[in-house]
Amino acid sequence: MSIMLLFKNIKGESVDTVKHTLEIMKSYPYAEIHIGTDSQNINKETCYTTVIAYRLGSRGVHYIFSKQKREIIRDMWTRLWKEAEYSVDVAEWLTKKIALKVEIDMDYNEDKSYKSHKLISAAKGWANSLGYKVNVKPNNQIATRAADYHCK
Image (cartoon, rainbow, N blue to C red; front, side):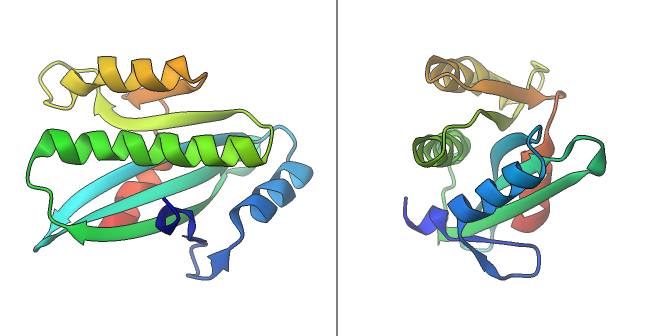
């Protein structure tokens, strides 16, 4: 878990996640916070990227991200479930440090023709039981879009 807490900004500079979040919330008290993870298998590794995205009202979105590479996970269900675990772990960690509301964006599709659809019930139920609003495709995918970009 500690590896996932090493967040960077888009310039690649390390960021103190708690301090950064407090600064954002001070400047934009109505900002929405979204946490999401995406993964890609590249060569012999699985790359996970977790993003904390701050939707700044009508001023756009700012985000920080954490990237982790590990031995390849060929089983799609295991790899996709790990995305939910990383997002929930970061949400739990951050909301214990700072009393704030966050949403979790899951890169799973409501369309039954996608394999990820089968994970929605369990993953969303788990996150909902912890008090998080969960967004799945095609709805609000603020954090997972940025995570997808940084996974490649």
